[in-house]
Image (cartoon, rainbow, N blue to C red):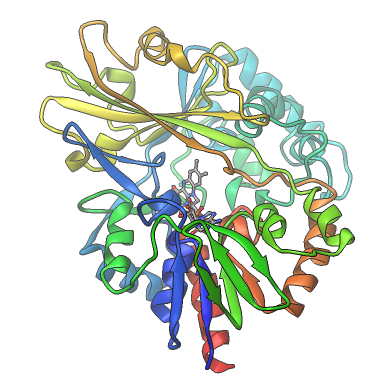
Length: 426
Ligand SMILES: Cc1cc2nc3c(=O)[nH]c(=O)nc-3n(C[C@H](O)[C@H](O)[C@H](O)COP(=O)(O)OP(=O)(O)OC[C@H]3O[C@@H](n4cnc5c(N)ncnc54)[C@H](O)[C@@H]3O)c2cc1C
């Protein structure tokens, strides 16, 4: 009989379990399911692990999401960039109209003077940005924002991740946007979905109703010869097939007697960490003007350590109690150390996102040790070596951190469904 062990009860592990037609054991290290899609309540506020919005292209997934969450709202993105004490609609490269004259001129000149070379995503991110958008747009947005987001040398990163995540209006549209307001919406997230109740965690609640999970069960050792998994509850699980959704470098560390070349490949995989600070504010006057109706805002300015903020209570008013508003503030780090996160409320007051008269009723910190996979020249080669080894040993490593990629909820659900389908057919 097939014995399947699923490691991790985030959206990937749970979706795989939901579609598997064979018995499986799910082991989850934490005391709750959800992974990064988890939501929690504090003082009447609903918080995600930084805003988790559902971007959907496939209508089959939309149907499933509706069923699991009990209904989602469709939200039209209202995002902007805080730059030189000014607010520019997102994406920067399609909204040059809102810049001061000097910055605008530099951006337009930059795009006209781009180097005439073939653009490729294995270029460094900076070369890619300069050849795609020119030096001005790179100087004012692409470089400073991405430096803060990735906390890694952008000259050592490739541009393999930009596909969906960096909107690419054509040159004419970019130049036109300097002289007239752009009405077109760019990017995969221009419309997104968000559960009517309980934040992104509603998706998890829908799945766990149907699935039994072993909580507080962190896998510690995987014996590929005897096909057993040892967990932190000191239980031994026998398996024929593993679906792992934990971070790939951690999976390789747990497997006993891994070939040296696989270990060496895993040591090349890099990622950053994110600290998300969730804040609930009591206010008689309502949300401060700069945040009115805003869903999220990019902060390339070095004066502030956070790279992005998002407003939960604008995405869904049910996320905050009456006379209050709520948001998340994100910081990134490459070595796990964060700068100035203790000053968060003062910094938010300085920028005008919290009024002096308002009261921060909740300040709650969520640390995400594996947040963004770093794309560099070693990643792809390392993955080829590791994936071959895992395939030979009937281990499917899926999800954002299992597959070691820059994915999002819909993509992870689809990947998990496909993996379950493959195992069902075996
Ligand atoms: C800052 C940030 C913002 C994001 N915003 C969005 C967004 O708005 N929209 C969107 O679609 N996507 C977003 N994403 C991406 C999204 O979070 C992921 O694509 C998705 O949640 C990944 O799910 P997963 O199940 O693959 O991994 P995870 O959510 O990481 O789940 C893995 C699970 O495995 C468990 N685990 C780990 N190790 C072990 C072990 N040894 N034993 C047992 N269990 C273990 C973990 O506790 C966890 O529950 C964002 C990601 C980040 C970092």
